[in-house]
Every structure is written in structure tokens, then in C-alpha cells.
Image 1 (cartoon, rainbow, N blue to C red):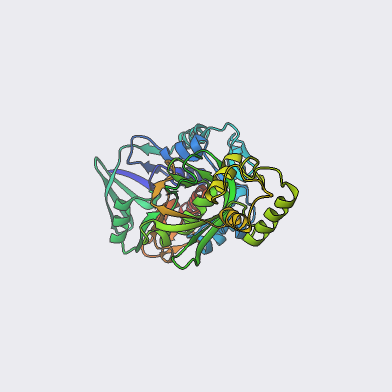
Image 2 (image 1 turned 90 degrees about the vertical axis):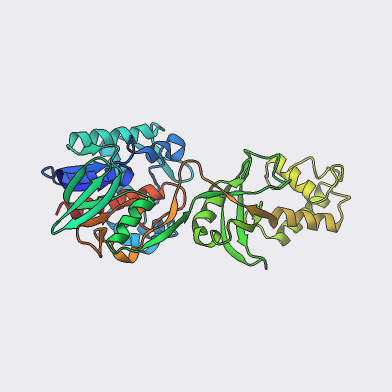
Length: 407
């Protein structure tokens, strides 16, 4: 049986961040990372399209928490201890410079997730953290003052363990054995499958829009705005992914069949759009409506909306009837689309669900149910919208766990 002071189950972002910070704080400790796969940090590798969206340029804890559909209240204290600014400084101290993109997302200047992976691997090596691959955990037992972990090939023993396994049903089951409650997992970041003639020929087109999920009576259940991307199978982009995260628990019982209302003019109300169209009727009388895009919309999108309004391609503004303008205003600001399913967002699979937050002490991320058992990352019922926020949760949790386990 291999002995250690601390065993971290899970060789992902949260696991490595915990190990490195703990080893740095107390170099005397023997720290082992157990990874079930043949490689570590696989999710880091594919995140942000292979560029690794490390964090987000939001520097106020309260504002940062607004991006977490689950975990908002619990993360406020931890963010006061380790925040985005601390993340930036942590990586820069280790030779990894980060840059801010227009939408606030932060990436390594190298634009490669390999930079983050190399940083973690070299730090772990420098600090003597042991990494054991192909170690799928079968059982965790607590005896007196230490834990025994049996994997498919070996046994390990440690006084303290950190579970950083992300959304792993097998590990959640083992944690239930310790008396923990696990909130069942549902997908949290996904795109909407929509088959609709209005967007069929527009894949790859992106535009700012606001979107609402509505019920059968037209009541708004959820809303968001931001860039909306039309894809081969429907709609994606931040505007949609925000809805999927905030609506994870609402949309799952509907089996992902629901209606959305899209305002292609972002927040412009239908009446104001109609007034603008009436002005165009006076000012651009001789122009054909179909030919020239208005409201700074992409031309192909404008033409699709004009067609969907039942307007002939040859109709001029001067000849447009009140009904034509009303239909156009409606298609521009309140277009209804039927969603008939979901697709996982790239490889960045995020779920809502995990260890119930009431059972965790958020000063240390230690279990309230079992002493010396700690958690970091998405094994907890915490998840965020897309944009680097899930990683920030991993860094903050990992840092606080490292402080607590080395005391």
C-alpha cells in the first residue's frame, strides 16, 4: 500500500491547482494525484477551442458571483480570498502571461492550452507531486484517522483526501456512502437544436440578439442577450449558452422541447421597430425592402427575415402596407422558434449537479459530513456560464483547499 499525507483524486484543473499550492505551502508533505485516465488535464487541453479560457476579467467578487447559476451565494466568501486578479498573478509568477479579449475572456498570450498544461506539469515535478495514471478509484474507506483508497490496480492511504473528479457519477456514489447528498446531474452548457427555414441557410452567421425562453402562454421563463451564432443544427453562442446554464434545471424536465423568442434588434421593442420602419417608408421610398439590410443586421439575415414576413423581394418601401410593416417588425423583434433538443457544447461538457453545497464548509471546502475530506471544482453542485468562470471556481476552490490541508 502506498502512503501519502494528501491524496488528490482527479488529475484535472482543480486537482493540479490544489496539489501545486499545497506542495508550495508545505514542501515536507507527500502529495499524490490519482488520475483514472492515461493522461492528465484533458479538459484543460480542449477548453476554449484549445486555447484554454483561464478566467474572466471581472475584478469584483459580487459581480463575479453573478455568473454562477449554482454556487453564487457560496462563492462570495472564497472569491474575497482568491479572485481573478490572484489567478492572473499566480500564472504570471510562473511565466504564463494572460491577455484579455474584447468580451472579457482571458487566455494565455500563447493562445495555446498546452502552455497551461506545461506550467502545471513542470510545477508539479519541481515540487515533487507524484502523479499516478490509470488509477480508477473503486472504493474509499475511512479508518480511524486515515483514508484507504482502492483503485483498479493498487491501494493508497492518506490522512487527508481531496476529491476533484468533476462530474463523475461513480465518485458521487462513493461520496453518498460517506453520508453526502448528491444533487442529480443535468447538462448545463448546450446548444439548441432548431429546424426552421428562416435560419436553415445561415450557418456560421453571428449577430447580437436577445432571447427569451417562453412557456405555452407566452410567459418569459428565462432571458439573456449577447452574440447569437446560427449553426447547422440550430443556435449557439453566448446568448444561448447563458440560457442553457441558467435554465439547466428548468429545461431538463421539458426534455429540451420548448419555444424561444428572438429579438434580432437586441432590446428594441416592437413598437419602436415599427416606428423606424415607417420612417424608412418615407425616407427610402424607392428602394426595395429586400435588397438593403437595415438596423446593421447581416444582409443574409435581413433578407431571410423579410421573406419570413411575407414580403415580396421586389416590393419597395413606398408600396409597403401597414400589415407588411407590422409583420416585419414582429419578425425582427419577436420571432418564435421551436427548440426540439440539445447538442453538447463542443467538448466542454459542464453539468449542473454534484455534492450538495449545504454539506460543505466554504471557508475551507471541507466536508461537514466527514472530517479531512475536501472538494474542489465541479464535483460540487457549482457551475457557471461560459467564459472562464468554471475554471475560476476550480482555481479558487483549489487554493482554499491547499491552505486548509497544509495547516
